[in-house]
Image (cartoon, rainbow, N blue to C red; front, side, top):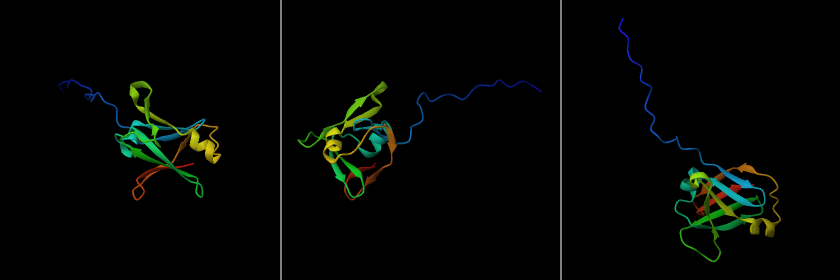
Amino acid sequence: MPYEKFSPPKKSGTAAPRPPQVKVLQGGIVSLNASAYEQFLPGAKQVELFYDSSVGKIGLKPKKYVTKAGFPIKAVGKGKATYRVNIKPLFKQYGIEANNKKSVEANWDESEGLLVIEL
């Protein structure tokens, strides 16, 4: 039987996209991976904040332009693949504790146009 040369499969050169992840960091910073940013806040420069105290949910409304009530989205980390929003003032005003880093559930509310974060 003749030998057949083995050639490993070619790599595409790009990593598979990661699932959307949203975290609340210590002190009141929301961190989104690139997949979450592109899915929920594509092209946004800022977000406006909303809070529903009856259910403990925060809403982030994406804004592609700068507003007085907006909080800037900053690209950070290696390759600028993580996006952060400092929402400490909202945590302080409503007495929300943010002592630990934790992954949180986040969903898009189509009717409100908000990324909803469950604390």
